[in-house]
Image (cartoon, rainbow, N blue to C red; front, top):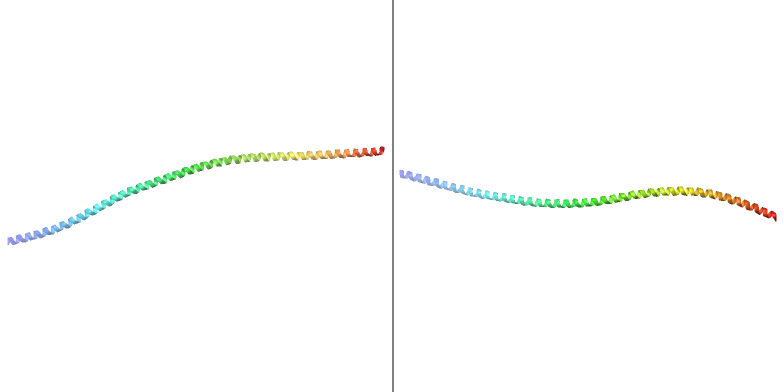
Length: 152
């Protein structure tokens, strides 16, 4: 009986060992799968980090290009504005000069008009005096003709 009991115990130990061995194998497989999953996760994270750095680099490059283009546009705009401001100042100077010339011309026209009016008055007075003188001389000529006719 002791032998039977030992065999049962051995059989029981073998069954327990086999059961434990199977459990250990299952756990080893689970650990292996978990390790593989963790390795995959680590690789994916590393790829994301690398990809993020690549994206960050690309975004920085694009930002640098946009900033360069913006600075070029700003520089061109500043140059254009400066040129237009210079043109505007020239035009303002020309307008001022034209206004001054027009004011002088208006003043000259007024002076010419006054002078012309004065000359016309003077001419009218001279014409009137000339008419009086001619009329007086014509009267004198008529009187002389009458006198000459009477003397004949």
